Image (cartoon, rainbow, N blue to C red):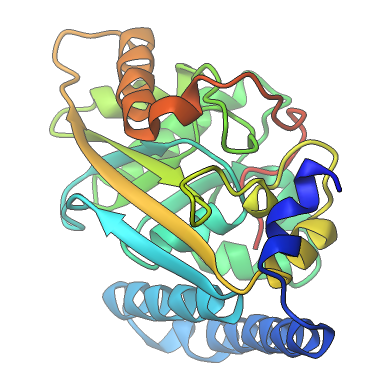
Length: 275
């Protein structure tokens, strides 16, 4: 038995249960599309954020994901750049179920049928990673959103890992944290098994497709997720690279031994956000 399937096999669900969960997942996504089309145009931003949090909790429930939160998340009313490690497409819903933020994602996702439209309605900021010149535009867009004020979340590794490694952070997206009055907050996400070891079946890494990832998650009775809010990084007098390195060091300490294991993440083309 390979390492990839050990967790699912150890605490697996039956075929009918997996089919039931998958049906609920599809129904929940359709519900999100209907809400985005017929409710969002008629309600204010605060109401939209409450709906997104409710929908995200429902999304995790359909996948039997149990979230444990450690620490206090940043105030929603303060301009904040939240940075975190990136393990799974579940990361987005784990964060949104606790804290209202807007994410930065690859522009390719915007072209996805139905799902791309749903992500747009959630206020996602899209970046063209193949164009280095697009970074300045995105940084300005993030700064504008934070000035409202709203929180923006980024995954500065630029890719996912299997949860046993923390890659180098790209410094370019830390520019908005240098804006006057802005805060830089750090968070760490872990998916532990009952014995405390990493649940690699919860990750979206390597050559694993989205469908394969969903199947592995649905095969588990419970997926445990931990969201650790690790406090702030003071940007005063620091460069983007210094902020990136300091944020990474804080998140590495939050992940503990998991951040120091030698494993491979996905290729750079893997989407940063999966609806």
